[in-house]
Amino acid sequence: MVPSISQVGDTYTLTSVIKETATGDALRTDVFKVDGQEKILGALDQLAGKIRSHLGESESSISRTSKPLGEVTTVSFPALQHYAIGYDNEQNGRFKEAQQHYENALDNDSTFVLAVGALGTLEYQQFDRFKGMDYLNAAVDMSTETTALESFAIRAAHAIAVEQDYEKAAEIYETMLREYPDASIYRNYLGAVYGMLGKHKEAVTEYREAIRAEPTLMIAYNGLATEYLDHLGRVDLALVWLRRQMAYDPEIALPYANLAYAYIGADSLDQAGAALDQALVYDAELGFGLELAGHLLWLEGRYDESLVMFARMLAANPDAVEPHYYMGVVYQSKGAGTNARDHFDRFRRVSQWRTEDNPDNAGYFFDLGVVLARMGQTNRSRAAGDRAAEIDPAAYYNLARLYSVQGRTDDAFELLGRAVDAGFRDLVVLKYHPDFKNMRADPRLAQILETYLKV
Image 1 (cartoon, rainbow, N blue to C red):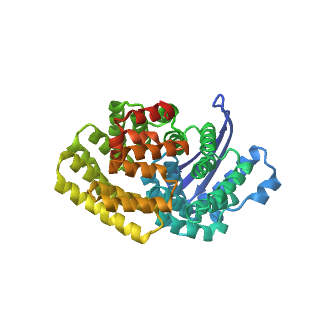
Image 2 (image 1 turned 135 degrees about the vertical axis):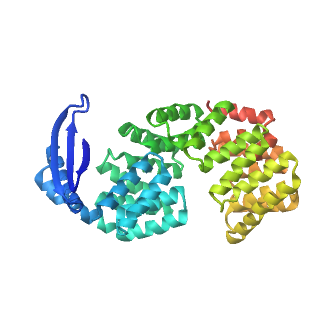
C-alpha cells in the first residue's frame, strides 16, 4: 500500500494505492480531497475504512474496532506530521532528528499520547534516562486515550524503563505479537527485552524476524549487531548483517561505529579506522564512535589525536566523566604525569561521590578501584575492589579488569576465565580497552580469544 498527501493551495488530496507486490501494478486507488488542514484527519479516517474494507475486513468489524483518529492520536495535523517524521527517523537510527520532531509534535499538541510515549522511550534509550521515565509516567496516565495496540506499547516501555520489570515487558510484547504477528517494530522491541533478560539466542531470532518482515528497519540491525558482538562473540555474523544494513542506507553513523568494533575484533585496524571516520562524518558527536576512535588512536601511539577524540566527547556531553579517565590514561602513556593526575582526580572525585550516594552499586566501586590503581593508591584501590566483590561476587569481568590494572595478571586471568565460563562474550573489548593492556601480550588471552571469538 502506497499512501500520499499532496497540497495545492488550501486543498489537500489524500491518495492510497494498493499494489501487487510482485509486479508493482496498481490494484486499487482511493482518493479523498478536502479544503483546509483541519479536515485532513477526518479524511484519513474515511480512507482507512475504505482500505480495510478493500482488504476484506467486514463492515461490522471496522465499525466495532475503529475510533476517530483525532480521539486516539491528535487533533493537530502538524503534530501528526512531526510525529510521523520522528518515527521514521527513529526506525532508521537517526535519533537526534527523531528527538527534535517528537518535541515539535508536543509543542503543537502537549496531549498527544503517542508522541509523549515515543519521546519517553527515545529519551530513556538514547539520551536522558530520567527525563524518559518522566515522559513514560505521563504517557501511562494518558494511555486510555489511544488505541489498544498503542496502549500496550506504552505499558511495555513503562515496564522496562520505570518498573524495571523485563519479564512483564516481554509478556506484553508477546501478547501484542500474537494478535499482530507482522508488527516488526514490536518484534524488534521484544528482541531488545530478551537481550535484557539474557535470552540472547531468542533475541537474535526476534531481530532477524523483524528484519525479514521489514528489511529497512535499521534499529533491528543495530540490536542484532549488539547481540552478535556484545553477547555471542560472533564477529563474523555481525559483519554480514552490518554490511546488509549499509546496503539499505549507507548514511547512518551508528552502523559504521558497530562495523569498526567488529573490525577491531577481526584485527583489521585500518578498516576499523576508516569505518570510524565515516561514522563521525555522519554524526560528529556520536559518543560511541568518538570513544572507539580515541582508543584506536591510543593503541597506535597517536596520543595527541586520541586526546582530541576524548575532548570531543566532553564537548558533546560536558556532564560525562569517563572521558577524563581515558584522557588520564593517554597522558600517562605520554609521560605527562601532572595532566594525567588532573584528569584521574576528576574521575576519582565523581566515582567517590557515586559510591557514597549508591553504596550498593558494585560498578561504581570498580570504577573507583581502577582509577585509584592508576593513581598509585594501591591499598585504597584494593579496598574498593573488595567492597565491589562483596556487593556482586559474580562480577568476574569487572574484577578481571581491576586486577589487570593493579598488575595482578594471574588473578585477572582466573577471573576472566570465570567470566567466559559464565557466558561473557564481549571479547572484542579485550583487544583495545586500556584496562586490559597488561594482559594483551600474554598467550592466555590469545587462547581465550581463539576459542570463544568467531571472526
